[in-house]
Image 1 (cartoon, rainbow, N blue to C red):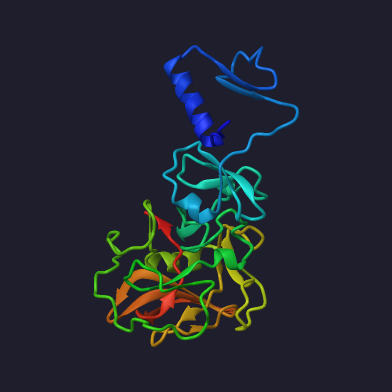
Image 2: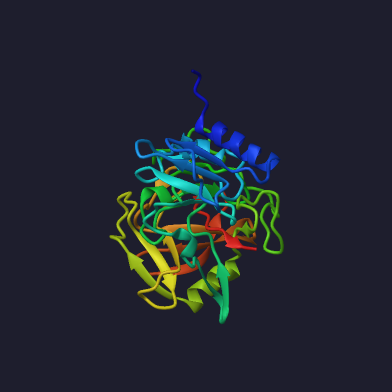
Amino acid sequence: MKKISGLLTVSLLLLGALVFAQKQQKIGDNTTNIAPNAVLELESSTSGFLPPRMNHEQRNAVSASPGLMIYCTDCGDGQFQVFTNVNSWSGINSVVDVSSVPCGAYVTAGVYKKFMCYNLGATNTLLDPNIPVQAIHGNYYQWGRSAPVANASTSSAAITGWNSVNAANGSWADGSKTAYDPCPVGFRVPTKVQWDGVLANNTVSRTGSWTNDGNFSTAISWGPNASTKTLTLPAAGYRIGTDGTLLNRGGSGFYWSSTESSTYAGSLAFGGGSASTTNTNRTHGLSVRCVSE
């Protein structure tokens, strides 16, 4: 007897339910007495339901619709996940319900803006965004370019073939989202003014050792008070613009803005005792935290 995959079986049954709108389906040891409010019921005292299993890279390649469910084998310790109506995967058995985390900050007095909960390129977006670990450090980007130049797993050594030429003026822009902006739909690289607003209108707190030893457990946070964190940025260091060598991870963080400044570009820079906006060489590789458009 040939086996049919669980996904195909369910798909065929649901198709049958659509064709025969009033017909209900029951599969299992006892196929009588289906629940009156169920279009499909599985019944067994000896077996379980096994959904499609895949790693997070395979999951991300799926053209998903809200409600689609899979088992992600390398998300945390492995977990059931469902694709939500906000176009993201959420863990059914996740320790943290990230959909309820109010990620964002005040960018001016009384004006709250939503930020993505994780650095762009984070490999596990089901973890607590306020507890810094390697999986939420994300990628490094050169200003004005959409492709990452390194990630949190890349060696700290110089990178062969590093591009030391500045991106052209207008590659990113304050007034509108350009084609080179790496952020997903609905988000963009923040402006320098928005980063200044975060600094001026939120309460700062810090986590970790603030030592330049390459650790992943150091971060700065903002929120309405010191005990409430709504925007946490890992101290991911930066990739130097001459050859891509990683510097200062664990001791400082550098995040791009979309704002041009002569041949430089604006960025947010912070360490264990300071945080400010500055102008940075465009060929450096910095972190990106996207803000809602």
